[in-house]
Image 1 (spheres, rainbow, N blue to C red):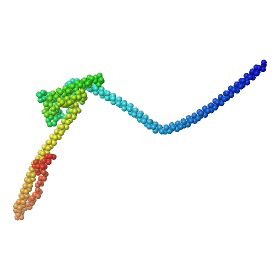
Image 2 (cartoon, rainbow, N blue to C red):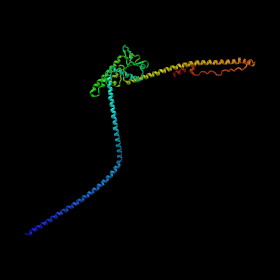
Image 3 (tube, helix red, strand yellow):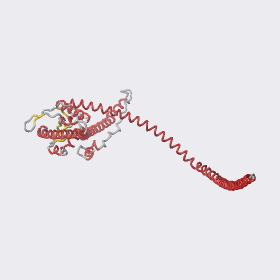
Image 4 (cartoon, rainbow, N blue to C red):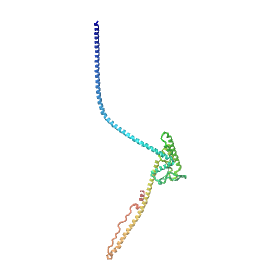
Length: 394
């Protein structure tokens, strides 16, 4: 009974030893496989690192080459960036100046709007509008270089062919004793009412209506001027009357609302003239006066030339007569000297030879110089000869 437990103990120990040996063998094999796998992985990682190092070296070379190639571009970009900064600075300064100028323009527009409103208020009265138109007309004629009571007359009382008394604002004198009548009373009330409306869409219809009324008023004024028959009240006047519109905008607005206005006015023998067109017309008249003055001077010079030529002919006749008189006087003097030598001095010398008289008698010599004859054709011919005609043509 005592040997059995020991046997069992020995058997258990043997089995345990066998199991531990088996387990150790298995662990040894597993460790061997793990070491082999680790070595392979390390070799693979080493190869990968070697390849990575090679790639990094190649990349560094490429980056150095790329940096060398990109360096000029970088410099250019730096210069461009500097220029962009300068342009940006200039742009900011220009925007600042532009803002100042816009502020000045806005202030000027406000001042102009205020002045326009003041002018519109002053021109609401028909008498004020008439006076302003007359002042504008006078400024235009004076700017054209014309003189009052010489080149034009103001507020002249006239009578038409039908016996109607009229008083035009101005009568401009034309060369040749001709005249043209200018009227400076243009209707502006509707235009001023339209100018007081702002340019918004809410007032657009009202503005168009006022401008259409302005065009109708100007057309009616043209008909009224045509009915006054100003041209028949002035002698040698063209059959037209000039209607002075004291502003370019007034006529432009009327023509925009009524495109047939100018044609209608010309059909009624009324010329619608703004300051620009009237100035051109008056400058033409002034030039015509200058040409007339030059032509008058030329005619006077021609008359003086003919008169001078005739007087030269008369002077030549008197000179020739004086020459002939001098020639006869020289001949008479020489004959007198000859008689003195042959008849008188011979006897006087005999008296000296007889000692009746003392001293020698002076010698009297004849004149050798002759009178210079006239050779100029103007002095030899009469005013009707070829030389006179040449002088008159010159």
